Length: 146
Image 1: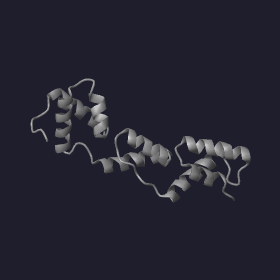
Image 2: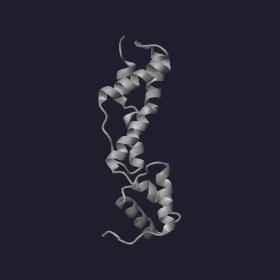
Image 3: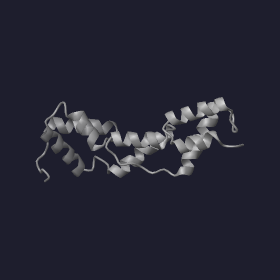
Image 4: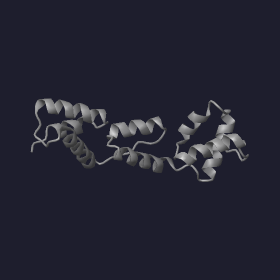
């Protein structure tokens, strides 16, 4: 049941302020506004923003956020956890691109290429795991031969 009334000026203004800075998911907007406004005001403001096309589709927003996080050298586990926290759907990444990113990061961290010593392997695994890469990707990169 959609409301056709216009939301209060303050709630709508706050939604516009948030969306002017960057794209937000609906869950983010609700969380940010729930301490200041009544539930009905928030719902009306968000519905108004959706009707006017101010809030992007969840899939498109998830892909955009994932691309931004990939530029910051984050692995798929980190990306999907972040998207879940923001109320967005998971994204799927090709394993080959994930491996290539992890290889570049490992070589940059160790400042040399494979094969790696036991101590270097420990550093690489911990580093990549903290960046959000899967266990499989971490093991593949640290065990590569020259």
